[in-house]
Amino acid sequence: MEEKINNFKLQYSMFLSNCSDEISKLDLDIGKIVTFTVDVSSLKSMQTELLVKDESLSHELSETDRGVYSRKKKL
Image (tube, rainbow, N blue to C red):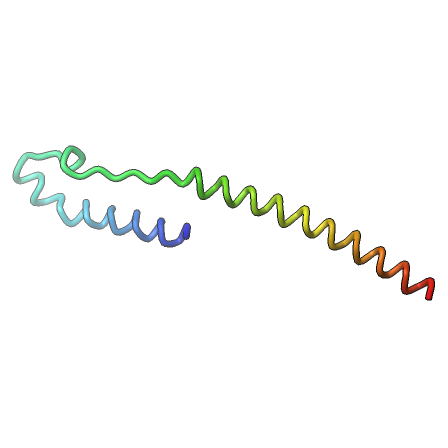
């Protein structure tokens, strides 16, 4: 998803660049005509939550693996 957002930002930058000559000839401010904002805070928050969950599950799995290994040794 981040890659798609970054590509979209790049397209917006290219749009501004492509319009710059026309806009300057008309003595206009493209920033007043077209606005663009990206807020990835919800995406970053979800990534953090998933990372924490992944680490927790990995820890649980390693604990389970150790328990299985010790039981196998007893057999």
